[in-house]
Image (cartoon, rainbow, N blue to C red; front, side, top):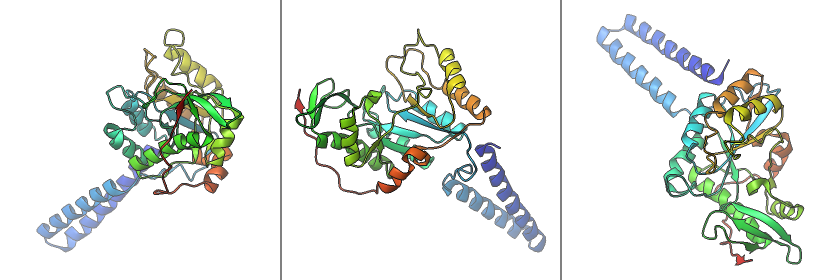
Length: 315
């Protein structure tokens, strides 16, 4: 039984119980008082349903073929459609967030999107860092222990910069802090380097400041950032359904500027349907065995001290 069906059944059962109680009261009281009580119980039931947070009924059930769907931020143009599909299929995901330019103006973590992120938190999704300015690693600087990087967003977008290990940590921390401010939910102590570009030195530096790196499985590269002409949606869907296996971490975006034929929801919805039919279930990364212990040991709390403002120099 799908989670949405389970929730609707439980709600219907509660409504039926309220109706039975009203029927008893109607037999023992005047018609007017029974009518008033019936309206009262109806209002109470509606209010309780509206105020009760969503609880995943499948979380406590066995999940023998788990998948971990993740989304990186992008231009946000398809974000509302993605949220609608995820809610319809009761799939909870992990979002890796950066403050990137949005298709409608502003940025992905700006005020215009604040309510959207709050709604995702209330729906049971998890969040992690993608570096605030979407900072691409380019090379290690062995003598200083730092890195040559190139942000694709923010005040230094497109510039080649030199980051110390501390500055890179601040870039990771800043995105986690921003999403916590927007959602009032602690971020996971995980990050994903833009483009998946890392080095052992970079990963070690991030772990020292409390963040473990998350890439994606080979089959989990869903291809939404590839050219539409060479990789049409039908081809991407067929490949994903054929190759994805249990335990895979899947990766897509909330909008890619260069893709002319949007991947979502054209591929996302049939992909979720097909994977469900094959017996797969979806979990957020805090339940992934490789990261579960790390997250437990490096659990974040709201209101923890913010890092000093990042400083960088041109490279």
